[in-house]
Length: 345
Image (spheres, rainbow, N blue to C red):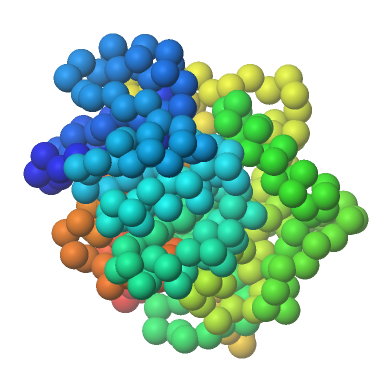
């Protein structure tokens, strides 16, 4: 389906980047491998014969220009995105090509909307941040659940992960985010971000079967609090995480994910349960799948595919739900997600 178009993957040799490279190749695109570490890039390129490798660094604009030359789009998989998003977006704007990233860092995504909305719109370039499990999938599910509603009172996004073995990149990004907000936690309430010093609450969430009722960390805030309010009039956006997964993430002893199948996915399973409420009426959307890192690849690649085939009206910085027809986009990922969407969505 990619018709041989070249797409740069910045951070190609990273954990998520490898999934993105494989997904692009499977979809008929030609991945251009790029990243900061010349040794790691060369080693990865040896495992993908026939693919070109272009070393580039976020602090070297000329190297980014060379990396993006002749490409149809770029997918940024190299965190921490606080350091890489802006330089790669700048390079994409200079090249006049769409930019997609898989950033879960709340602050980096806020920066993208704040600093590039006007410039990307003026350039006629699509910039889609957080096009991944966190930020992208939740936004698509909330948008699909909203349907014909123009406003809602609340949106709740509950993450039912059976475990969470974080990658080194996840740990580094989390450290950067905590440092940027001075160790405080965040929630989205009253139509704005609120920074708090107290501990997040623990509560129970009634997931669809087979999970059922599970203890969750409330206000376990992820990039959804940036993406959802960027285009939907919902003053309360709350996210939750199963206690077991949160405990895994917090422990320094939890190992990185290990592959259990031929596609390189881990044994981690997830259920994302979204509930939006308007008055006394609730609507629900659910997605089930395997491996939060692996599923970020089809999310990002489908975004590139739809942009390049003219199936989005998005120009400038836009979240997944704003850029695409959310129900149709989700159904395009049927090989990777099992969905339950509201009737008519």
